[in-house]
Length: 148
Image 1 (cartoon, rainbow, N blue to C red):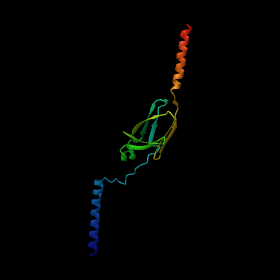
Image 2 (tube, rainbow, N blue to C red; image 1 turned 120 degrees about the horizontal axis):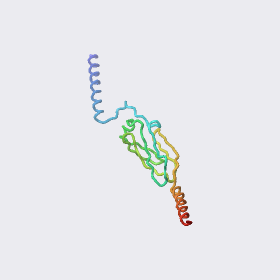
Image 3 (cartoon, rainbow, N blue to C red; image 1 turned 90 degrees about the vertical axis):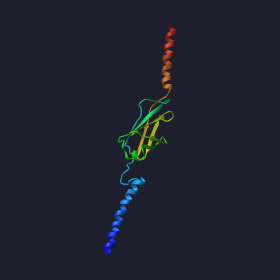
Image 4 (spheres, one colour; image 1 turned 30 degrees about the vertical axis):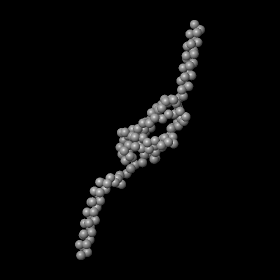
């Protein structure tokens, strides 16, 4: 009698395990066996133009070395960053995202998310740095024309 009782319990628990697996797949529960890697400094490359003007926005590019990073796949390409203290959500397409930034008041750029941190100081040239030499050249040409 005990053997039959244990056999019935064993078969019931065995078949109930199959029904739970099918229910989990249908309800959209994430498989916990997949390891979701955190974003680190080894995962993203930041590209900033070498020549920056203070009166223009600069296109800054973030690129994942692995476009199939588990965090990108889980969040459908949308990652939240903190740029100079402000929240910004970037949408990555094929592991790449762009955003515009203007270096008018601060020459610092700080990008943070999870275990990723990027901080740099840039040299941004103001408008007067172009107008003053141009003004001197124009004045010199006018002076030369007047003297002749």
